[in-house]
Image (cartoon, rainbow, N blue to C red):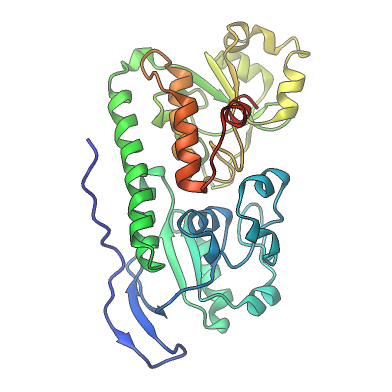
Length: 344
């Protein structure tokens, strides 16, 4: 049952005219840190795509800069104003860093940083931007379960309370729904899933990886059982290991993997391939499953649960997709466009 949520995180403590801002307020961010931010926040720089996308969902007009150039899909589905934004870069992936000169020129009102299991990267962000005197606001995005509260928080932070609560309610309703459905699936009936990454399909994620959260959330069982020691993932496995796993379902977003799958006789011996249960993950405007992890996963978890258990979770995926795109992206999809998204 959907909780009657209240957005309670941003605490407006003091209104002041002192300091570097004409009007400012003190807040407590989601890690409990107290800091002063402009009363009206017009420009937000997200240090990585997940934080930038969260700001975009609440208000596209507040995004101050891009983490990487928009690809064709993003140009098609995202607000046209983003095309004119400067490319700042960010702290994400394997060693990427932003262009600090561009960041200083943009000079956002705040910097929004995702906390990933309180990693050293978050401390580095604080240290690097400290000379700029731009408040750094932290939000936790380790798990999909964090999203309802983060939407509430951002809604209050950006004075978009109604919008934040609306997105939060959708997120919480989705989480409640998948918990209820998952509970009805016996452990010994859980579908085994292999997440194929890379052009050869021989990179994957541990079952503990944040990049594979949707498998367990949707009631699947990730066949790659191991402990993830970092945030990047993409662990290499051998063809023999995948044959040994013999999953019931394979999912992937790699176009090259699908183009090579039929031509590789080794894959034909795997149960998922024999049974025709190899599925391509939708990825427009950005991945529904992973890389970068974003709010699109709220739709992705429904897609995956329906894909794994169509009789247990009979979902009108066309209607759900259209509703989601309207709510989160302000896009009205017709049936042809929706089918194209669902059958990439």
